[in-house]
Image (tube, rainbow, N blue to C red; front, side, top):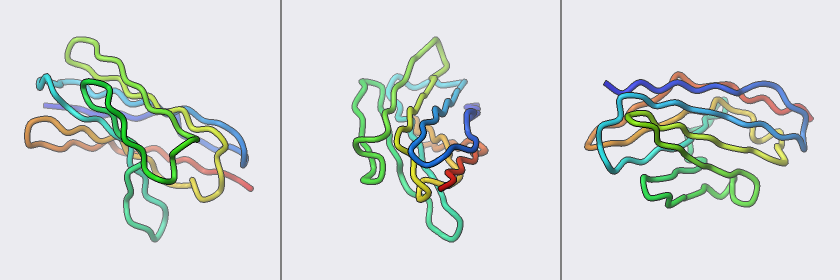
Length: 117
């Protein structure tokens, strides 16, 4: 069973930086995709960025040029990092870590990021 745990959210001033981390344990598939999604109040959940097992990254429009995703694989655990720079008030949301392997999708509990202007 895959378990997904995020950490690193918090309050930051506009223009500041924040780093989020995610640990996904119990990974069994050689190929998998891990991603960050976010959901602001009253809005739909959206993709922030993803990275697959061979390192291919995809970023949502809101993240391009400001956020960077990376991953490390240690045995059956994937560690996902996201460095967020030049944060703006519109980046305020709950950020979720997402894992896709085989035909299954797993979500973390989410971590709140609040950007004050």
